[in-house]
Length: 88
Image 1 (cartoon, one colour):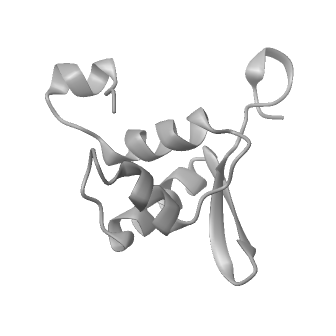
Image 2: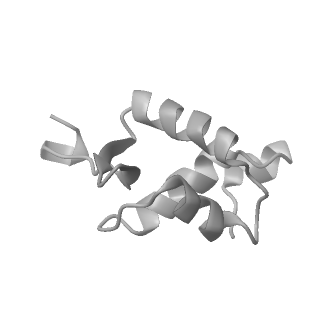
């Protein structure tokens, strides 16, 4: 999986960016924590506990949304809206 310029320059991989890139890359799909973990498994070893913290943080930032569907939590990229891509 590609890494960001910031990660490259810092010589450190940010798992928040990996999760956000995954969801942003498939904006019409929602993922469970296990789906996210499985999708990133080849590139990064992330536990479900770490993913819970990452998705909580990204949700608080407004980057992703979550919903309980059929008793399971799903996460999806929150597209910018409004003029100039701003959320309104």
